[in-house]
Image 1 (tube, rainbow, N blue to C red):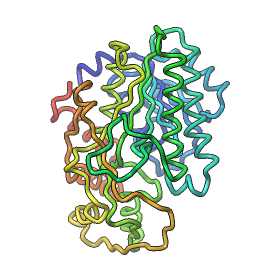
Image 2 (cartoon, rainbow, N blue to C red; image 1 turned 90 degrees about the vertical axis):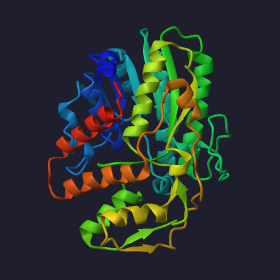
Image 3 (tube, rainbow, N blue to C red; image 1 turned 30 degrees about the horizontal axis):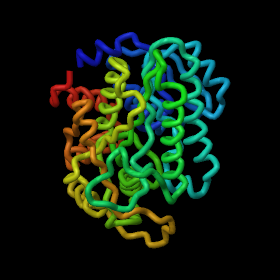
Length: 357
């Protein structure tokens, strides 16, 4: 990890949504790189959260309980902390929640992202910002080839529409304010279905599996034939980090969008994922839930050639490896093992075995 430490040692990094699933993982990784992390989140979390299990509060430099819809407070944090890097992960990230509460989804994912971009305008120092959106930002026509970054944006549900809208706002801000800005470089990152230890959200396949096992209940799956780009959380996080370094080195790729997902051949259906999980957890009971009324796409794939060509990024874990790492994490969690130590080992093994410097 020496090269990463060279870039991030003692650098001030704002991470929005640092208390969430991906936010807590990237905060842990950046802490290992020697960064001074400034966390921004509005959530009060119980003991069962990745943030608490990994003791993220002890690993960050400063922490602000601020809603990203509060622009004045957000701007003040940016001006006071003078970040070198920004990773914007704060979001309302569940499709089901977006259907029941579309207003909160649009406020958080669109206005909140706008507030981040607006806050960046007040910085008078070099700063690279990665705005994380989603693979759901594409107008999904279930094409086989995998979406490329120039494909049409859209979304039939509020969550997908909010992420597509955030991309449009990003493009507007880049062309209006940052295209010729000598301080700020920005890009968006679109990741696939992320799995890994520490996700306790509802309506996500792995957390639902763990809840079923611990409660001795039957897992209900909604769309058994739906195909998704499943990937372990460390894969896209490395992509975000590599992208931030690229932006910091030169402004050539500022304003650009990047996909981060598994290889096309590693896209599996929900039922295929369940079969892989049952290999590790054979007593898992499953049934199809036909009462779920929210329309879900049957096929979603990402083409990540751009990230490979420009950032030299490519996925290193296959789906079975990703599932095994995830199940290992939850088994240790259920058995009350040291989760912080396990997560540290998973991060170190991932970076060292794959020869990431």
